[in-house]
Length: 101
Image 1 (cartoon, rainbow, N blue to C red):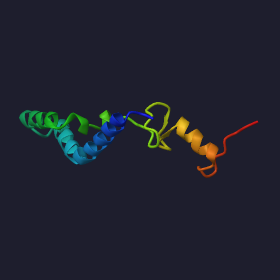
Image 2: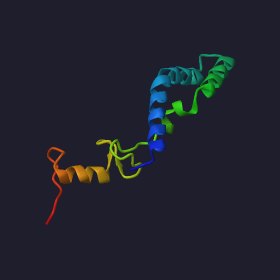
Image 3: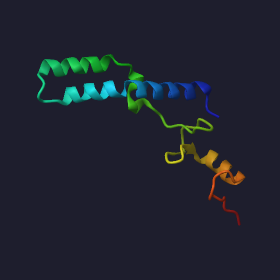
Image 4: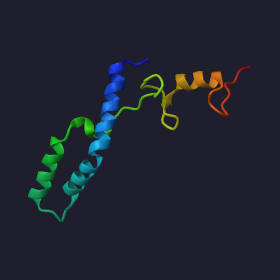
């Protein structure tokens, strides 16, 4: 199991990203808009820099929802390979059977 602090930090980043997503998109569009003057684009860039760092989508790290493990993560299932194997062995994932011979 991952440290609780790492799991909580990632959840906090996800909340901040959702909260500031619209504002960040608007400011990023303004910085790339050639129709605006250079001063307006620069002001938009400064406002973008004032937003919290953790509100950026690139700061989010994918973690297993069951164990919090950050490595060997399947995006489609939102869990790590170890958690997936445990659930498959217990028969809790429909249609998935752990092979044995």
